[in-house]
Length: 316
Image (tube, rainbow, N blue to C red; front, side, top):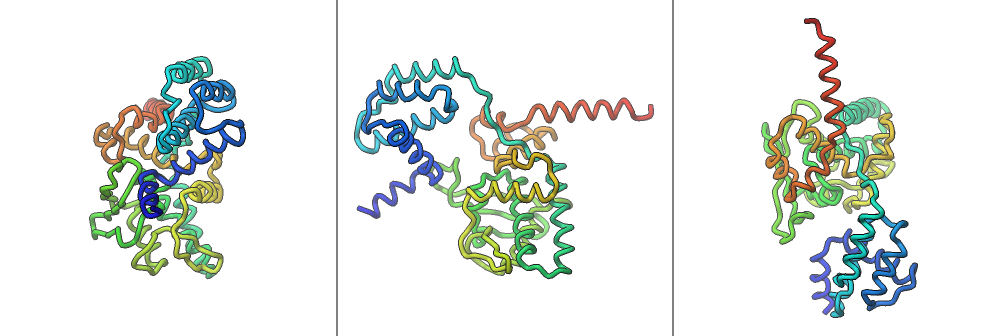
């Protein structure tokens, strides 16, 4: 039976299961609710947290309660008309600005990589294997995350044996499962080889340091340069990114998350006249509305204004 449960649990992403557990704990422990519950109690819970929790968090908690009741064989109280109408009313009467990660734009990417390159040259003379390993790892992780618009769990799921470098073309990464791959069929991602800010050469340098032929690509590196066997956890990516940005002197490094790569790449691609359908296919979006949320229109407007001002200043 334990084996069956293991397979059932694998149908839901680990991050989703964790979020659901936390939501159920808040309902039971923090608020004092009982499971199974009723539609009236769910409505009371929503009303009690209508201002303290964002609409997205309330939606997540409803999904967690729904999943718990469904898997335990109880009627789902979140589907009751009373609950649905109350949720809609809260969304209308308590609108909240959506929190989005700051997009990591190309100039910021250049600054971070330039800093890492400078540090690598310095550390080569200082012979600090621990720092050298972290710099090589971070450069490869950052460049791959940007040019493939990877999520944190996707970059952490990369395995050496599932990647191959194609000389003069780039590299191919196979991920057995992603967030959008609901059937777990696996998907290949092509990564371009570039003249500047090249993710392929950065990956090759890290792989040479790693000196492994299989297992997770991105791992912990200790102060002596020893590389762990386990892959980095998705929760460790945000601190890693912010630390790298802060070290490079990037302002407001605390505003960046792993989603900053996707937002930055999407904004860059859209600004370079990528066909919107091609962009959706490249990143892996199926819903145009989801895709548009990642494109920073404010940044594009600012770039257009700056370009216009430069044109006016140019000699006629």
